[in-house]
Image: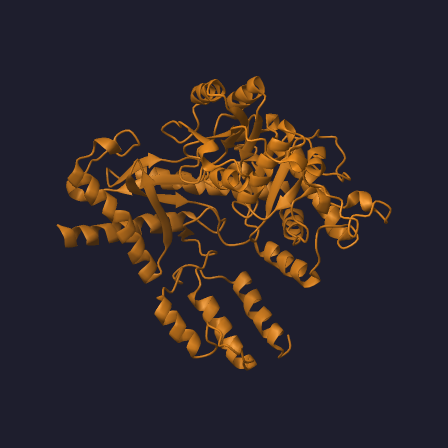
Length: 501
């Protein structure tokens, strides 16, 4: 590459992608806000003056080096902190190429190749989910869905689709004032409430349905909630099923929920942002049995599949509803008499200009194939199972709380409290002193992980008690990394225990 600024930045980005931090490299070099400001003041300040001046290329490159140095290294195999991890390298290259071509995915005119790529990818996802027949057109003019800027936006779109089906004139006449209700498990994502607020339904319209100890919605409780809603003069609008809850990775019984949806004439939306990718694995896809009976299904490929953020597909059982719901036929853009206008996708979504999210997925899928995608899922499950086995064989040092799929939720128990049983049912029975001791441990251990840069693992409350969440997303996580994570927790926990005892 040359000496131009863009080439120097690109060189650093490429070097990072092909050789990311690993092993004894820090997961993060933690710096405070004040320290970060001081670091950048030495090259290019973070803030802007009232008149922004141009900086020398060398200073900007120095700032880029600081960006890399002080960022969280999500590609590191000991980053198990979020429902995503380091990106697939092919995806990064695809995202770079898409950005370089810098077009909008709204029309065939502006994005002929990407329009067809979207059709092909959405059709393939639709076949995997059972939305369309296996022998359906692999490159349809109107694909079974669209790409969205994230799972929350997809849920918003799905609820608007549900409302438009229920009240076809809502786009022109507006809301009637009737009390529409949305049902989601009490372990479901808060996108349901955000969407209800934006749609004017109000957050009170979201009815939280009881979930079981694992975090899955209880079908009978849903039936009772639907009946009660109708009895109160409300109109059930949609059920949001969850395939892979954020905290415990619970999967709702989709067949049971579909039975209720059909009995009450309610839209069934499946939030598969996290767990939808189980469909890639022949051994794990059973977790989403019944998804083919839903009306819409959101799938975040930037989570388990390592696509760069964002890469979200919203599948719709009846794709003709997209235009019915969103089309306004702006005549300066969606002219029916222009060349290949039938392929334009922009009038089937709320967005107008839309970044090209499909290229990275298309390239990565063509590179890895179905077999490679399945292997990625199976590896993550295997590593989570190794973590669960470590908990089970720890003689009471670690206590399993819940979790499934690629997720293990557990606690570390100080020697003086072993054995302590930690389950969603047993946690409320802990003494106040024991609860306080165990509750304080995960944040203190995580703080030390961050300060030393040794790992990043999340914690969250289960039944009001902070517990660790081992969340395997990346194919770079190996058995040694799982063992190292547990060894660190043990070491840090014993150190904390020694100080407080």
